[in-house]
Image (cartoon, rainbow, N blue to C red; front, side, top):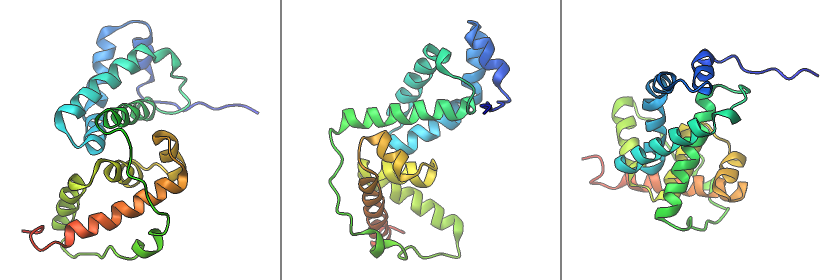
Length: 186
């Protein structure tokens, strides 16, 4: 059976980087830095730390470019490096995630209600996510914003899939608590 590789539109720039072209490294940085900073910021919730993570991730990516095999886009490969670097930064900041029950998922599934004012809702959700504890924010961000499933999140964080699901459920519950406080929307 043939193994197909992903055809990345920026593959020529990646190949130039592999050949030692510093301008190509700068091109890749310009192409991906903003999106990767946003990924880092959603996970770390700290501007300076997100910048540090971004720098570490690009350095790591360029040092390990030989390991990139074109099986996925360069962007998705880089995103994994950024996510791992952000998780490591949080681990340095806080040594363990909050232990969770596994019973919360059913209680929370239907709690989030729709609001007609989408822009207001999005801004309030963003503000509420920033107020979440690190462990909750990381799982919620990886699942909702970055598109990882619970098995992948568990692997990234070194926890079980069920722990990831529980933390996600707790994060949603905490998010609702934050958003339902009378002074929050003000």
